[in-house]
Length: 423
Ligand code: FES
Image 1 (cartoon, rainbow, N blue to C red):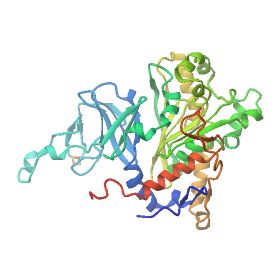
Image 2: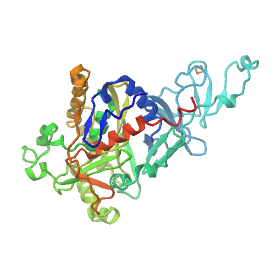
Image 3: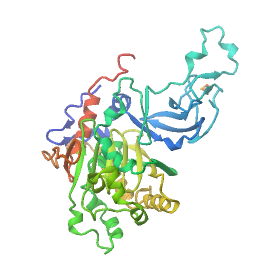
Image 4: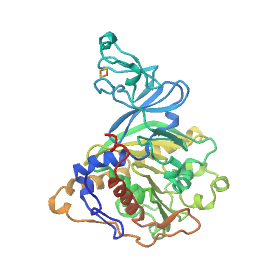
């Protein structure tokens, strides 16, 4: 293993570029960050009845997420216990059993091996089907409509892992007593770039908005000239915590990019009763967030996404549109289209971000380039508890959450994981 202490300097806000490019660090990340953390799997609405399933990834591990006969959500490694083929190749569907297409071993919704062709052939061996069920995650929890799981039997409960971050998430996911729902399926695309470039940006980076998205802001602004100075330099706060979670949001009342029908739909007085003024004026507006390590969301667009790592140089983005269940059909449509136009794979904002990440990744393998540390110093010393927003917050234009994201990453990278003694 590699000691990463010299690569992440939280105090001085310096990050070594090898964290994005080094294959050995990437492999260590799979074993120590993805194998130990709570990871986002999907939305509870994707599983309505027994036998409904969808497939996704935890780090690079393929998983099946399903509802068993008792209505419990379960998640299993999507790899057959025989020769290791993927048991399920579909993205989603409904089934009574998971049957491997290689030799036909079959597993029930609870992960038990229930059928083995030519099973007589095993009778000379010390054969017991009960020993060959699908490998299940160690813990699975749902929270605010989202499904998270971890391979780590010792992971602290999800609530504890999220801490004050949950207060901010509720401003997006608990606006409606009916909860949220997903519409329009999952959009998936591949980007050149290390997954952390995206995760850290969503956690910490409001700074890029006025420059990277200048043309998009011009298109959206009523004057066609982009936002006025007071909005471009909007006040706001950025939350960060020791678990690596981060979110930022403007607090200027005009600094919103809502779809108009969604803006008109909301009863802000009722939302203030439900969530309090600080949340309605802050994290419910246009903002950004990352739940460590690779789940991110944008409250105003209703976009939730996961940055799946696919090697040090590539990520796969999976994005959903999440909206309030009570929204009427026309408002739902407006929000879904708005999300696609702004943050779909060809969205006017998404294009700017992907271009930045791919550009950084493309040059980072250069020998000299790779030796020059990157600057994460903005807002050093601005973190405080202000009595309005829970936990530690800093100015909106700040790298506070970025510093904590990498500090958490380094802490996990330097700590032997739960599985290392068992191997
Ligand atoms: Fe699945 Fe052989 S690999 S049955």
